[in-house]
Image (cartoon, rainbow, N blue to C red; front, top):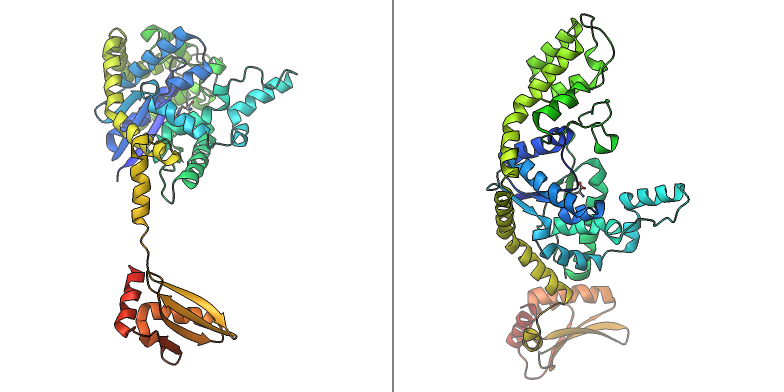
Length: 430
Ligand code: TRP
């Protein structure tokens, strides 16, 4: 069976160079080489939790889809779709809501962080906490379990959600699986190699720090302007510079090979000006990004094409979702009424009556009797002092027949011969 890799990207803003280096580029590289079945999707239902601005959600969905395609995602090789195009997901979400304990969600860190902030401000702890935010890990579990995904590449902040998904799936399987694991337990895959790109000021590149370099938005001009803003010290041209004193070098590294990295460092040590260094960094990034940007711009001016790709992605995998959901609905008792009478009939016809062995005790000795399927007494055996030994004798009798009873009490009923006993034993073991 091929391993299924699944991950979601929430479209609630535009992407920056940190997303590209840390997530998009490695994910696409892996998808081209690995022998896995990949599911990449826009978690647009999740976007509604973070962002109440409809126009922004709309814009971000198309931007992010176009970004992934422009960066080389091959929709023929990877299932690429929007969460909101798979109605089976919210349906599964509801069923999972009904097996997930509230206490588990109380521990979710995104929700807890919000409550902490509210409390520290002396406000109502639940201020601005929607049910969407509170139940967010359950929706994420539905995304994952819907396609029986095995591996979930995520950032460290998401590990807890994968654990919760496993908890929910385990509980569902125990409650409804009748010994079968209907839902597959996923594993988080946190890539230690994934580079964390620093931003303009050296801290992790993140929108919340306002230190990002845009990936495509604003074109070449915006990219250049952002690179020029990378913080350095005030050493003059000609002065020796420490390559590790600025995030400029780390950002360059993410787009350069080993030789180029060394050359850049040594040029800085020998007095390259910061201005020239930034120009080099800009050109290096742009070399990789420019062709992708062109494709991005093309897709952004043809959003209908992106729509088509996503629709096709969804229709290709909906049968997988449907199949699992049918199984889940059946397991929880949401079944069609048409088959009810048939079901109860099969139950009756399935109940086959077999010969039986019953143990009993008489005058401090342990015996057993063999009864036919119709309840007729066939024989009595045993007569041992210990119930345990009698039990062992029965097991041997079941397997070996009458020969196991040598040395023990054994009495066939009138009209019963040894073949009757052998037949009864083999019927019992059927
Ligand atoms: N919650 C994830 C994030 O914010 C996105 C996401 C939604 C996701 N559903 C998922 C990731 C399922 C992995 C698997 O980054």
